[in-house]
Length: 328
Image 1: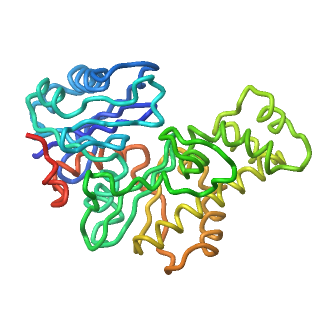
Image 2: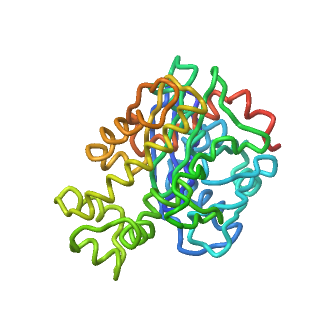
C-alpha cells in the first residue's frame, strides 16, 4: 500500500500525518509553532515530529514527503521567503533541503492552500471538477486555484496569494507583508483583533457595548471571542461580523471574477467554526460584486485534516505544473 507523509505548516500549528493512496489519514499529530525561531527551526520541528510522533514503520514505508506551507515561497530553492502571519522576528525559513537530508526522502513543497486545493481535486468534492478554488479563512487567508484541470503555479509558484487582494484601503490597516487594506489584514482570524479596533474608531456609531469598549481600550478580543459576542447579540459585534462578511464576499467575488470556478471549497478555523454566521451572509453579499455566475460553494468535508491530505496528494499525484519546481 502506497503511503505518503503529509505536512501542513501554519502560522500557529504544524500538522503531520501518514495518508494512503485513497486519501485516508492513518496517523496524525499536531504541534504548536514556537513563539520564536530561526531559519532552521521549522524544519527541525517537522523532522522531529515525524520521527517521534508517527509510527516508525509507516514513516519508513512512505514514498515521499508532501508539504503545504504558509508563504510566499521560493519553490526553486525550497524555502519560505516571508510568512507575514508568523510571529517570529525573522519571517523566513528553510524547508526542503534540511528535511530531505534528515529523512532521506524526496520532499515536495507547495503553498498550503494550493496543496489543499489539489487534495480536494484528487480526493474530495473537487474530484472530476476542472475549475475549482479552495479558500482557507484561518489565521491567514489563502487560496489554491485549479483552472482547466491544472493547478495554477505562476512564475515563482505564488499564483494564488489572494489574501493580498485589496478590499478596504480606507480602513488603513497594514498587512504583515507591508501592503495596506489587504483581505488577510482585515478579515483573517489572526488580524481581526487589530481591524476591529479601527472599525470601532472609524466605522461604528452605535451603543458602546462590552465588546466595543474592549476593542477601543483592550484587552483586544480574539476572533473566537468576537464571534461569541455576535452570537450573543452584542450590537457592535453583530455589525463588525456583518462588515467581515462583506469583506469576505468582496474577496471571494474577486476570485469568481478572476478564475470562473465551478466550485469553491472553504476551509480554515474561521469559516469552519462560524459557518452559521458567515456562509449565508457571504453568499448573499457576493451577488453584489461578482460579474461571473456564482459557483457552488461548500465547506471542506475534511475539516482540519485538509492540510495534510492536500500535502499527501502532492506525492500521490504530482501536479504537472509543480514538476518544474521540484528540488533534487
